[in-house]
Length: 275
Image (cartoon, rainbow, N blue to C red; front, side, top):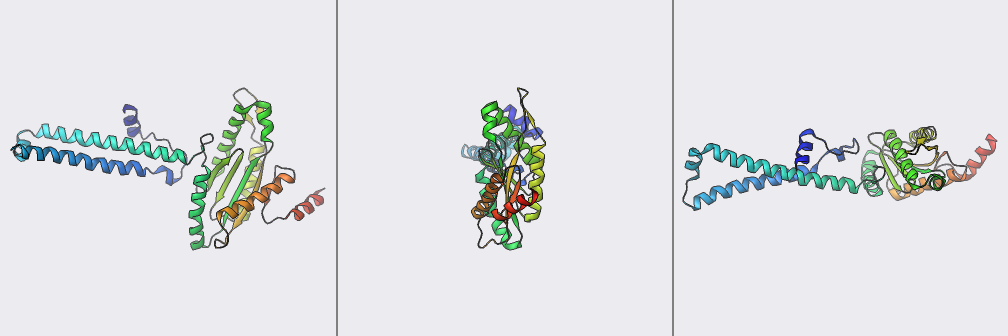
């Protein structure tokens, strides 16, 4: 209780991102109002009990204003604090339910919810949305060579890079294993590809030094898909298109970004030209 009051005064809340949906505290605010009303009800019951006992509340308050002021104040403060404490715990549990516990990024549940919301907005605004699917290259080798704790450190390291690279409107999620998703509302395929390339380059140039002083350099592959047709395309379809592009990126040698509109034949032609 003392720790919570200190956090309440200093506003020391656990906030994982600048996303306003997470900065707000709907449960806390709701519980504060509810417990405030409970406190008012308790004070009214006290006055009604005096009436039932044949005591005039108004006269008694006039004779003992400080006593009644103290009782009413303590009652309201106590109920407000308990309401804030319970509501804050509920908010925290809801936030944790939407987060990957290892990296702190969003999980697939939150990702699909936001994508469903964007589909309605996209239809109205006629905007383009993009999705980038990332997958670490040779992650199993990291676990085999440095063991799983080092692999977890690496995933946290990648999560920080991705979180830093995300714009305010982007949804950055870890959907399992070494796979990460960037969902970019109001973003064209061209811009999404540039972002994916920048992230790929940053990760390849930012090695991790583990707690045991192991230096781990890793690369990442990415598939990019975009749509502005929200009537025939659903979130799952957009994800599947990015997944196919990611598969081609892996097949073509990894550490590269492939868009869903590039066919396998075109990719082979590019590789032969470079050779």
